[in-house]
Image (cartoon, rainbow, N blue to C red; front, top):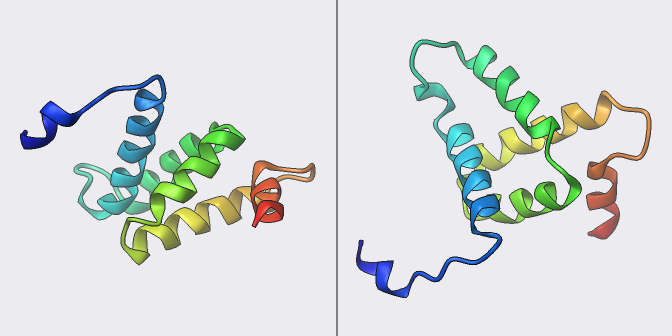
Length: 98
Protein backbone atom coordinates (compact mmCIF):
# COMPACT_ATOMS: atom_id res chain seq x y z
CA UNK A 1 0.00 0.00 0.00
CA UNK A 2 1.05 3.54 -0.58
CA UNK A 3 0.44 4.72 2.97
CA UNK A 4 2.46 1.88 4.61
CA UNK A 5 5.50 4.13 4.94
CA UNK A 6 3.42 6.51 7.07
CA UNK A 7 1.81 3.80 9.19
CA UNK A 8 2.76 3.89 12.86
CA UNK A 9 1.05 1.23 14.96
CA UNK A 10 0.17 2.03 18.54
CA UNK A 11 -1.17 0.06 21.45
CA UNK A 12 -4.78 0.77 20.41
CA UNK A 13 -4.36 -0.37 16.81
CA UNK A 14 -5.68 -3.91 17.37
CA UNK A 15 -8.78 -2.64 19.18
CA UNK A 16 -9.52 -0.16 16.42
CA UNK A 17 -8.91 -2.78 13.73
CA UNK A 18 -11.32 -5.19 15.44
CA UNK A 19 -14.03 -2.54 15.66
CA UNK A 20 -13.54 -1.56 12.02
CA UNK A 21 -13.92 -5.21 11.03
CA UNK A 22 -17.14 -5.34 13.01
CA UNK A 23 -18.42 -2.22 11.23
CA UNK A 24 -17.47 -3.75 7.88
CA UNK A 25 -19.46 -6.88 8.77
CA UNK A 26 -22.47 -4.68 9.53
CA UNK A 27 -21.94 -2.79 6.26
CA UNK A 28 -21.85 -5.97 4.17
CA UNK A 29 -24.37 -7.98 6.21
CA UNK A 30 -26.41 -8.85 3.10
CA UNK A 31 -23.33 -10.23 1.34
CA UNK A 32 -22.21 -12.69 4.06
CA UNK A 33 -22.32 -16.08 2.29
CA UNK A 34 -24.28 -19.16 3.40
CA UNK A 35 -26.36 -17.35 6.02
CA UNK A 36 -29.50 -15.32 6.35
CA UNK A 37 -29.47 -11.67 7.39
CA UNK A 38 -31.42 -12.45 10.57
CA UNK A 39 -28.89 -15.03 11.80
CA UNK A 40 -25.98 -12.74 10.90
CA UNK A 41 -27.65 -9.91 12.79
CA UNK A 42 -28.13 -12.13 15.85
CA UNK A 43 -24.46 -13.10 15.81
CA UNK A 44 -23.34 -9.48 15.43
CA UNK A 45 -25.68 -8.51 18.26
CA UNK A 46 -23.98 -11.09 20.49
CA UNK A 47 -20.58 -9.65 19.60
CA UNK A 48 -21.71 -6.08 20.24
CA UNK A 49 -23.14 -7.14 23.60
CA UNK A 50 -19.66 -8.20 24.75
CA UNK A 51 -18.06 -4.81 24.04
CA UNK A 52 -16.92 -2.62 26.91
CA UNK A 53 -18.08 0.96 27.44
CA UNK A 54 -14.84 2.28 25.94
CA UNK A 55 -15.20 0.03 22.89
CA UNK A 56 -18.81 1.11 22.39
CA UNK A 57 -17.84 4.77 22.50
CA UNK A 58 -15.07 4.07 19.99
CA UNK A 59 -17.27 2.09 17.58
CA UNK A 60 -19.93 4.85 17.71
CA UNK A 61 -17.25 7.41 16.84
CA UNK A 62 -15.84 5.23 14.05
CA UNK A 63 -19.33 4.58 12.64
CA UNK A 64 -19.66 8.25 11.75
CA UNK A 65 -17.45 7.60 8.70
CA UNK A 66 -19.73 4.77 7.49
CA UNK A 67 -22.91 4.99 5.37
CA UNK A 68 -26.19 5.80 7.08
CA UNK A 69 -27.50 2.23 6.76
CA UNK A 70 -24.54 0.93 8.76
CA UNK A 71 -24.99 3.59 11.43
CA UNK A 72 -28.71 2.82 11.58
CA UNK A 73 -28.16 -0.91 12.06
CA UNK A 74 -25.51 -0.30 14.72
CA UNK A 75 -27.89 2.10 16.46
CA UNK A 76 -30.70 -0.46 16.30
CA UNK A 77 -28.40 -3.08 17.81
CA UNK A 78 -27.38 -0.75 20.62
CA UNK A 79 -31.02 0.17 21.21
CA UNK A 80 -32.03 -3.50 21.30
CA UNK A 81 -29.37 -4.24 23.88
CA UNK A 82 -30.43 -1.22 25.91
CA UNK A 83 -34.03 -2.47 26.11
CA UNK A 84 -32.92 -5.91 27.27
CA UNK A 85 -31.25 -4.71 30.49
CA UNK A 86 -32.51 -3.17 33.71
CA UNK A 87 -29.30 -1.72 35.20
CA UNK A 88 -27.30 1.27 33.98
CA UNK A 89 -25.84 0.12 30.71
CA UNK A 90 -22.95 1.40 28.60
CA UNK A 91 -25.53 2.89 26.23
CA UNK A 92 -27.01 5.06 29.00
CA UNK A 93 -23.52 6.19 29.88
CA UNK A 94 -22.89 7.18 26.25
CA UNK A 95 -26.23 8.96 26.07
CA UNK A 96 -25.43 10.96 29.20
CA UNK A 97 -22.07 12.01 27.71
CA UNK A 98 -23.66 13.67 24.65
